Image (cartoon, rainbow, N blue to C red; front, side, top):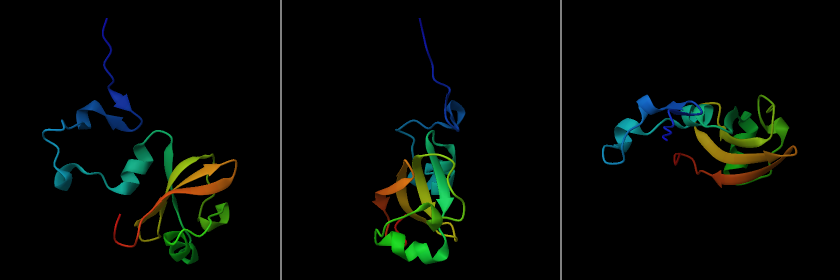
Length: 106
């Protein structure tokens, strides 16, 4: 007669904040933590030469990253210093961008 979701991926109900109490300065997650905890998403670190290329939407490949992803899906592409560069989708080994973030915008 009743169902209550207590977890979605790495996010728990204990961490939840109501919309009325949400304060971005306190509650907004760092991008890497979000990608690590979100179901169906992951994060990868770009090799240094690929950071500038990704910021202008140049094509990505598995060799663009320090580690090769184990599966298709949506990934946060991070610079070696931890900045979010792009969101990209891997499908059948091919990469497409979902979003690209100018330096200092993510």
